[in-house]
Image (cartoon, one colour):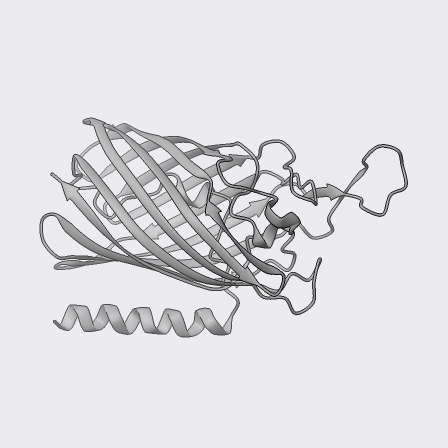
Length: 295
């Protein structure tokens, strides 16, 4: 019981600061591939999870002034360890966006990845992950800008390399953004670089995984010039759309029994993005879910 009280107290502190400091809790996919699992030492054969996330969009200083969008996301996740050192991961969300310009809902982008353990001994190891974010979500519903859309509209490739030693892990990830989307902005995102450090804290049935994430957009995002009078479309780079993020992300698990686990995650930024042309910025975000595992 004492460990549960500590977990709840920690999460309440993170929630408090998430509201105050404009958390960047969403990304284009690179943060969701790879990483040191909280169950690295006792992997189950198969698990399925269901989660819910609520978020408030950050003000879009490029496109609007005071417009704030509310987000509800319901996600199903699957993981299957096909071989002793090889696992497949899949997740698909159903997203609902609501704001002053209207309500939009629909299936989000499918995320599929495979993780291969390259080296493993008693205390350490290397994992390589390769993933794809597929444009299964609508990116131009109701002719609204990206903050209202359920999908990003591009097929992206994601690569991640993870090293873990005992309770510490380090990751490097790269997301290769796909082609220009079909949104009214005709957005072309830049590629993303991720560097992450994690530390595993175990308290009986409770596991807490704090992470520091450095995310750098390597190129400026490009959108269509809607004011151009040229006979063909012209595009321009959005100023400050290649900014850096530095986030604290805290994940927590509570193991109910051998088959069921409750989980949650929260985030706060040390360095926040000012430009939200891709619609990914969140002023607040929190999620909770349950996972069923077959050992």
